[in-house]
Length: 248
Ligand code: ADP
Image (cartoon, rainbow, N blue to C red):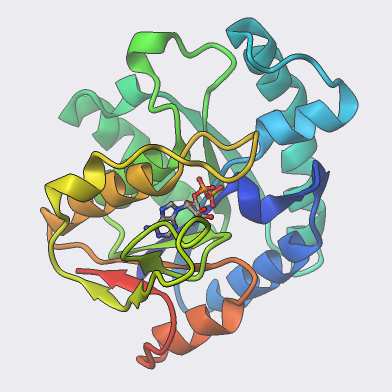
């Protein structure tokens, strides 16, 4: 199966520094790469840039500069780790406009197919440094849903800092309960306030729900789980769904 993984900033960075969770994620993807085609959508360029050059990221041009500084740093972190498993990676930077028309997305898909046929793992990110407001996704949650659909993947796995989707924001409501399976995205959920956890993050739960809705409308499952607990992914792929939320 072709599987897209989305790794969020909150998973990659801890207190402004790259977390060693990245080692575990690369290990998992290398393992799965033996039997599946793996595409990685990774956030974290702005965060990586910030470690070298702490600019005020509330200014758009600074954030774009941080993405430009951080993208090669982030790629180097992945490249070195995948190299240990003899896997080559490719950097693929996209914008929303690349998915505007069937023709453009077909062109991109052909290139992705070449990478996968050659056992290369594409690492996709939004081309933040030159994106202008009208054409940005602004978060990799929806980008990863587009990648999943337009590049013919059968499943999107989102690794976040939260272990499931809850019936209320678990950071604010201690009684919130995890939901194991979501078959319909309620409109009221999409109106909740965007609350990304990390100061570098742009997503929050709402963009994840929008991504899930986009895929559910196309009959493609999305699985949300904690990037800290990769065994939940291993088990899920074996058909044992005990943790995390399946949107399908
Ligand atoms: P990532 O960087 O992985 O994309 P985000 O910080 O953008 O992660 O989004 C995950 C965060 O969304 C959680 O840590 C949690 O604080 C917040 N959140 C708000 N409402 C919910 C909810 N109903 N269920 C799960 N998480 C929620």
